[in-house]
Length: 356
Ligand code: PMP
Image 1 (cartoon, rainbow, N blue to C red):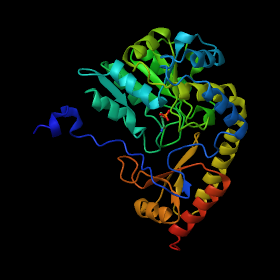
Image 2: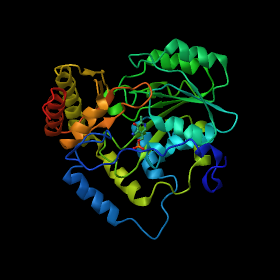
Image 3: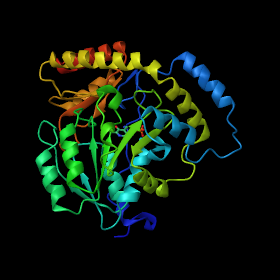
Image 4: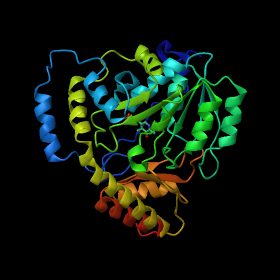
């Protein structure tokens, strides 16, 4: 049967990405930063935004921002690309490396956007599922890559939604074993402090994805960036929309990046709170949290879907993965403020103990 209004056939089985954008007292569902940008930095942002010429198109490649990111990472401008959120750069990867007759290697359960982008672009998806503890089945991945025919893959480190880092040695072996593009998605790198950046000069096929949405409290602005070989970046430039990063976002991101040291105490607080939340989860009977190097924690418990409802009824919004393949009975909580985390732990304990 033809799909609605004769849209492309690959859309037929696709459901739109749904972040479950719902109002709640404690929004702990989207791995955002609970601390908004501080007043002093906001004032600087306002001053900078006032100077933006709104009648002019923005610098298409946001070169001032590229230069700042390049310098901070010991790279040249042509080894950096910024995008309208990391999401846009992920889509660009599927456009540039995927397509009919090409194959993306997915390591589920992981960020669902990778697979959706592959399907949208008619790219074949090969899966090497993670082990029961969500660690990457390293030998299986290397064996699949050795078979050939893989055009690109993403190693998410820390992985979303499961939280664990990919091993540095494994990623190096992978980079040696294939010419496929290997993206290391480091959206949560500031919370794990582990990066593949030192390997960029050694492997042309390595590209790193980062975002301003998490550590830098800018989820509302949409700004992500890539670090990679200049030749790889040039391929990304070929498929990007000319003005995807608007002038106001560029100005905001420049100020935030120049002030990035000011975000460190907030990041440290989130890392400390993460330990407290994991500890609190372990104390609730029947709840199994998975170790996390990011700003969220995945946990497993019976009747997760019902518990999600009960939490939401108490004003706490977490992410329900209980019907997602490989994540049955799992919920994910983002690390919020101390008060939000306390509200979450209290509500979860009550829900599990049947006190709601
Ligand atoms: N990669 C991963 C693993 C993510 O979790 C996210 C955000 N949910 C992104 C990339 C994209 O982030 P953004 O578009 O906000 O930069």
